[in-house]
Image (cartoon, rainbow, N blue to C red):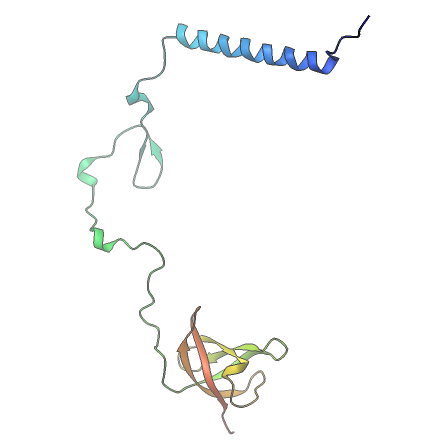
Length: 151
């Protein structure tokens, strides 16, 4: 006589599936018996001026007009950046010779400017006073033509 191909775990899985189907049917019947779903007005949620969810609609007199020209998508343009050119002075705050880059702090506006080894004219180290020009790079201002200031 051949042994049954159905194992204990297969039987258990089949029982679980059957139980899920029955539970789903029972929930469906309960929803129908309770009078259906909520009305659309009961489901609406409003957001107040502080960003909190509320069930009451906002006061129309509190609305403010926003011009579509005032909306900026993305990162706002940096208007006050100095363009390329103009000799500036600063101090080397950090320089890594192995990696070939560092930063110069401008004396006038205390802005930190990136400097690469290719932008150096004279060899520099930290705390050296230098003169430099700037150009716009991919991530911001880069110092070029970096020269040591003779003390």
